[in-house]
Image (cartoon, rainbow, N blue to C red; front, side, top):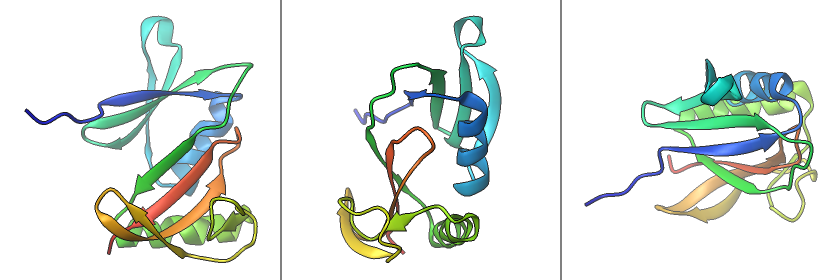
Length: 129
């Protein structure tokens, strides 16, 4: 039996700002409100995985790595640079404005760019292409 991650709840300070970031910068799709009492802003990454953004006054930074095809990686990286979001080639220095760097993901060597989302989560966009 194969297991896959179906969705995860991502705590955010501001749902609207986070929806804008994940859709305009990373190119993901906003699916609207969901969950009990519509507490989640649902961001669809693909046909089998969503980020369920839930407002929280206490957001602890976590690391999330998103594997993108090369075209989406290039488009997202260009958006990051155009908007002026600090980024880096190393998870310990997300504002050195260098990159992409080389890293290792679940399927091997990647090109990687590190940045923080508006909530302080450490994001890594990667491509294997």
